[in-house]
Amino acid sequence: MLTVHHLNNSRSQRVLWLLEELGVPYEIVRYQRQPDMRAPKELRAIHPLGKSPVITDNGNTIAESGAITEYLIATYGNGRLVPPPNTPERLRFTYWLHYAEGSAMQPLLLKLLFTLMPKRAPALLRPLVRKVSNQALTALVNPQLKQHMDYWEGELGKTEWFAGNEFTAADIQMSFPLEAAQARGGLELGHPKAMAFLERIHARPAYSRALEKGGPYQVGR
Image (cartoon, rainbow, N blue to C red; front, side):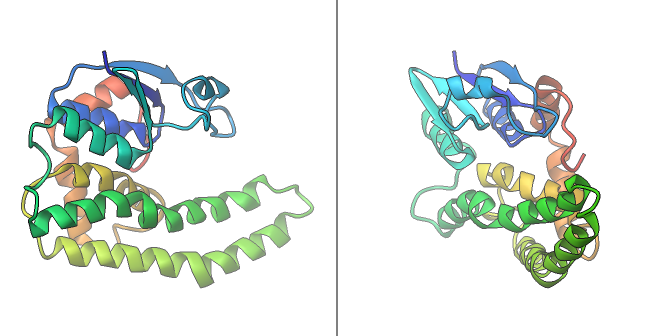
């Protein structure tokens, strides 16, 4: 049976949601983050990088959210959650599927990093680290993040979903950046269409089922 190697509060929650949308049977092997928020070393037995999400299926071990999504859609989708080939919507689908990790998460990760650095610095260095972090946030990270959030808002003003007027796996992939932006990026300030997108996905029955099976999930919730 298909197995999801699931790390709590991680991108692997999207994999559970996709499987629930597709109605594919699966089992979960659970891993808990360490106190420093890193994945446990046991995940390295599944994939050398020890990262999540990872799935195993029919002798295949597949990592990376976009690759997992493409595999599941191709293997179990039967044309569901993906626009028809050779359409503008399919091109948008492919773009957003890879943009979610390739571009959107970078400023969000930098935001998290520079926010945590002063808290974890030695007491004597904390004022200096805080000053450097605040400068980086103000001059670099926050403007980039705002540019991305404004971009999402504009695109969701054109169509209801990211790839078009139909819900697709690209929306599942984009859920994590938007949830992270809501949690620590100020998405709720001036981005009503992006916030409405989050309301729509959180209302989906498959999303709720994935939460029940995946356990506590705090990113944006």
